[in-house]
Image (cartoon, rainbow, N blue to C red; front, side, top):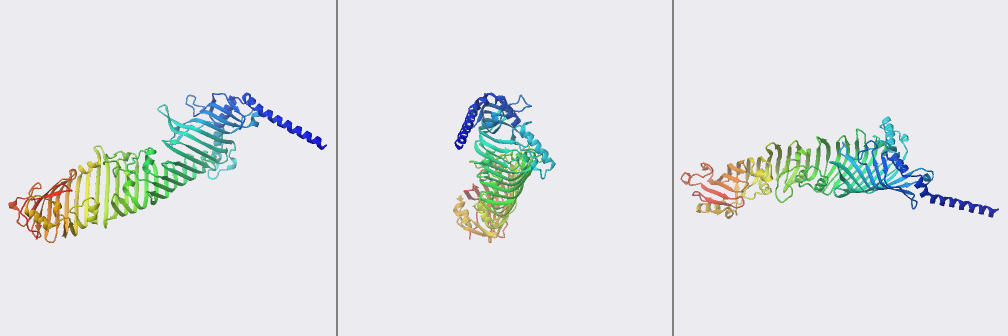
Length: 625
């Protein structure tokens, strides 16, 4: 009896194995007859919602997986027969269910698109997306979910969501194109990745990589409630974008409804802001933009506007805190907010958005006058320590505004040179050309340190003083601003010293007659009780209206012109004992005739240029003793 049962069991197993072997052997035949090309195309259409066309005959493989290999596959919209396909692929590999195939049905869980071309179009939001299908299981599931979300937007009943299977979609070596003037223009190349979405009411993820504008990029997206998200409800979302020029990540809640929004934590980092601006092809002129930048912030974004709260900004390893507001007006980005830094390079920061400094090319170059058309900016900046070129500032309060052809940068308050600094730089584009206005007021500053920072090392009184400069001129190029500027200059100096002048030696050489270089009498210092300079500037030439230096025994005066463009000097002056009025030149900067010159006054002429002035006596002088 036991042996009989064993024999029957062996026969049963043998028959089962034979049936399975025959079924497997028959699969290609069954697939080629019953799962015909149109049946696969119909199932793919029902799944995707697009009209699926398969040009080549399906090829069925049994090992290592039971799958259909389809060639020349296109997915098109049902309603636009003349439009190019939304997706076309050289080959599509579909993993089939063997049991369903034996029953004459098509069921698959994975589809692989090899060398697909995906056509996208620019949406009103500015994003590029493919046209949406008008039917199919996916669209029906989203429509059903939309009803669930509408019934209770705050807390939709997730149990009522459709549970239709979706599966996995893989894509390799694809590209994304958009239509430009009737021709395909490539947006993304070398596209590879996959979508994992087991069922409509389950979580989903997308991983994709490709080449965008010459750089390799990687995108990772996931959501625990993707169907709620696509139906217009709020759902948790994580997003990560990585590329060599920049990285971005978001973790929070998103909605794709008519009132779409984002709410969560975002991070952005770039080793070079200039490279990011160039790579993104933003219309913001990069100029001499700052280097590394990173931002971490709480983000709330909706309807073309984003608010960044509790924002941490790091610029070239200089951290700051504040809040920013991004929006769009007439197609231009609008940035407003406040930022507070411990240390900040003001010139490099603002050159990313305004032409406050020439770019880093060999020469000064032309000024970009179109920048106010590309961005609206309203920033309030503060910094405990800041630099503007070689100038060190402290306790800085500044503003930067760019709008409608006008760009203004103001330092309303700052400490520097043991005093206070206020400055303004204004670009105003007018029909006749861009006008540039510069203002500087340095109050109670160390004039010696101030002059050194400004590049003036000759005959500047060292002490405490106040300096005011106002310049206005055409802004075609940086050189033209100074060469053609009109304005004024004034300075008052308190007690101190006039370094670089040996007055006894100067008077002696001036009395002896003959030309001599100012450098010949520069080894000395003259204590002074005060000084005052006033000059009017026209077309880059300064005319001294008043220039007096008072010492204990003498008063030194100067009159004439100094050119910025040629760096030339044409000045007359004199040294007068205190208590005696100075004999000013009669007209046009010419000194009085020797006959009219008091014998106690030493008159002279200053010529040459700023870096190497020379002195020419024009009257008998007094003794330097």
